[in-house]
Image 1 (tube, helix red, strand yellow):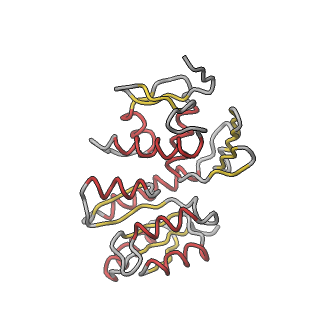
Image 2 (cartoon, one colour):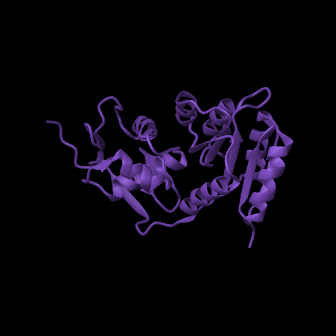
Length: 234
């Protein structure tokens, strides 16, 4: 049985060596890129299961690499964990806006990073009980991680897809931002409820006919969100 492949993108050799040693020790295959262009090339040729992407790269930085990956249908589905020395909220939000699935700030413990990698891959590999779900002009295949709207495939990031799945499987129920953070991110994310809002906004832009007046993903003011496939306008 072949090992799951992880692409590490960083321009610091000692960081690459540290990550490569520990990730391989955890049972994964590792491929490496040290700049943005090579990262995109490796992502297309290797199709890794996950990408660990440093933000501060020579030439094309991590933000631009993330943007290019999310625009390419061949590799847009690959989950991305951003690695960076920056810790400001704005940097985190920008990364999430561009399609990163997670964000970890240097210095970090290798144990925490490998735990997050395992958590992401576990969610990717878990097959849901209900394979398909249809509403309005949208079909969702949970097994293939596909969303089809009007016969056209809609590309969602891993976190966007997981968020949609949780909302649908709890349709009609109001889910708080804290509940969604706990269910999807799977670890303590204190004070980061803005993360949920960013992903909800992206999700609405992709599946709603008018994301400024959403039909399906309702905001329950002061609480959280609710999925409603029996929308009616008051």
